[in-house]
Length: 303
Image (cartoon, rainbow, N blue to C red; front, side):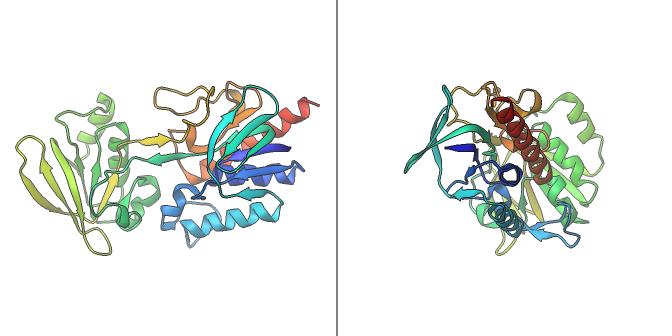
């Protein structure tokens, strides 16, 4: 029997585990077969406090994990396949066995929707990104592309213009899904140009991005564009489907009530599985801290 079971091993889950173990709670962290979250796919991280020279994403996560283990959390690299939050103690099942806990913190994050085209996956962190606030400074005075047509694509493009020489928004449809206000903001920026009815079909380059191959979605015409980077802004997929009975919004993000409570008493949420606004490592860590403190207070109230 654990006091707290934390599901997920990104900044939110690991930070929550640090706080819960230091509070003297018996803590289990189910990290997933591929632990560490999206930062494991990131190269240099320059905006996480405490690292003035920057740090590689996997190194940052390794440090967080070491700190979590140092304070006594039990970490198992397995995937959660089912949960039962209908009664106490809560039950969390993996492929191999099941675990019982008095409280649960869900910190499973969200996965970027990638384009899924040849040449993309191997260049993530080498010219392919999904986070302008994270990576825009690496593209100072360079030409970049933003793929997408929603509010997030417009916002990414506007952030990039603070550093990049030119930003091209490529959208496969003839009209944007973004709000009119966000469209107006992007169209008013002289650094931003638009390519409508255009789809990226391949990312070019050997070790890093050198260009893309695109196709006109109306006439099928193909051509190559030279670029230094591609920012993919077509959405995120929250890892929430395994949690039956937990309220989610229309996109699958878990709904957080006051102080990181879910709709089930004793089950808390932290990080990108509910936060679709900021999606930063440092905010995820902060939310993990808050959820851990709330879980601790809730457990005290049950005695």
